[in-house]
Amino acid sequence: CNEGEFIENIDYRLSQNKNELYKWHCNDSLTDLRPNNILKEVTKLKSYSLELGAKCHELFLPEKVEEIERTIVERSTELKTLAFPATITKIDPDAWNKIYSIKNLYFPKTPPIDISEITNAFALQLAHLKHFYVDAEALDTWKSKFPQSSPILNKIKGVPQDVTITNQEADKIIVTVRRLDNNTQYTLDNTQKNITVPRTTPIRIHIAPRDIYDLQKLVLNDEEQQSTIFQTFLLEDLNVTSRGETIKFQLKALQHEGGSIQLTTLDNQSLESTTEVLRGTKIRLQITVAPHYTFKYWTFNNAIFHCLDTVFEVRQHATFNAVFYRQKALVDLSEVDNKYRLTLKDEDGTVVPFDRLFVDDIVFLQ
Image 1 (tube, rainbow, N blue to C red):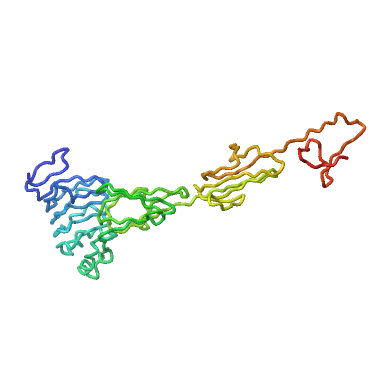
Image 2: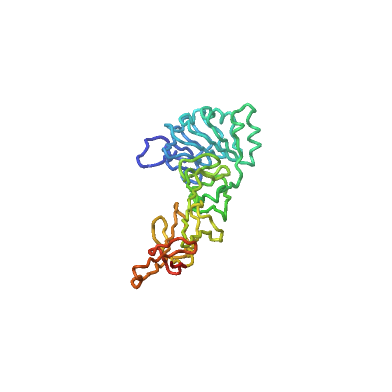
């Protein structure tokens, strides 16, 4: 029907010839009406025909729309990116007067629309409009259409046919990219730092920190995001970086006269007894026992271990201590006449108490 009341639980309403859209509900974050078979013959969007939910941030209009009437939406929304079809010819000056949040516009190819139609339709949004996207191959044509005094001219940006996503911090973060149109997933890390996909492809980006890194923010083209997950239609090359902090931990190996603790990396680089290493680094710990001593155990932050050689992954600050001992010498003085006084001295002439006498000690008896 051409007119009639909105039927509850039905998301859309078209004219009988399917050329005019009277009602459509959009609530997905990325709403693409181009491939929708229901709307493939729509050439006109009627007033109040779009119901945009709070989650709808990016919207591509049906691919054959030619005309948009006034007040296309009933209430203000958080729409950020709005894309038109190549067939658009007329936009009412008050078509988008309820939406002040639009920051990006996209016009593919060179649609047969007068520049004044665009300028008048988005007069309210020009102050905070960030990008006016056009196809890169039509960039010069678009720039020639706008007068030099137009505030839109310096916002025009060409979108290449193939858009590149690059992980600029592969040593700190791992970037996962999923194409939402065909569910293909890519991982950008040290082995593959970038991918190329067609423009306007809907994608989801997710970043995860490596062990050495404390991730705080996802950053796309120097703009911080509120979450480590981001969805968008690709309209420009994306450089993925982050805000965060590289994590280091202090390792301290206590020294002992009965032996020593050596810390080395897996490529045999020796570390100082007190050093700092990145979180997730694998370290080899070896115990060396001094002559005449016996190894008992070593401790890691008060936990006890008995091996002499091990490899561990650094996940926290750590203090290592090894415990060694010497076998005491038992001296039997029962046969010594009590009128004698026996004194033991070491090589330097220092008196050695009997309770500090160990096996293999060299002492002098006086």
